Length: 244
Image (tube, rainbow, N blue to C red; front, top):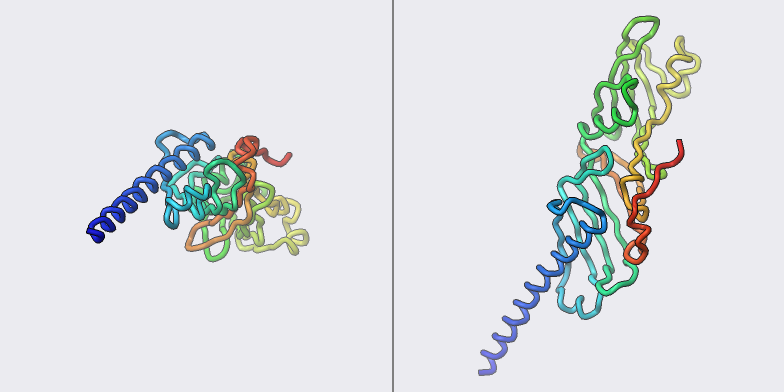
């Protein structure tokens, strides 16, 4: 008889854990979509680590993973992954949250062209090795000359940055140190201006870009969230871009 009772109790606990996990995941998804003003049908997967029932009693989830294959972040549509710890259930500050979003070459090309405007000489963007390459044409003395730029990606003040490290114009290759002394220095120097794509105004003010790097043919941007983002509604409002 005791064995039967134990089996029944175990079944109740397992069933309760299964239901609790599903309900918690659904509630987190709903709250994130509402807080970030995402479409109601936004694809967003939620995984809660550990056994959920004791965490509900404690009032805080140890580990939550959020992921989506496609979400619009300003001019970029990206796959996003977030890992949060110490997630409060009944109010309070968040323990921590870090995440990444991935940018393909096609997405980057569209974003760079949109940010630079119609006057940009850039026609294509590729992700190669540890950097980014851009190609296009420039006009020199009435002639169209092929242009190739090597750029180093980075992130600063809510902007994705792309700093030119070398430029090839026809058969001539220059870098920031030699461009001034090159035959067309005055015309080429503007090519070495850092290109910026601001996304701070499309992210919550409590989310901060940390860095941008190349991995497996994609750009990986990292970010963190303020612990107060779960208690201060202002941190859920979109941030602002630096004054240009």
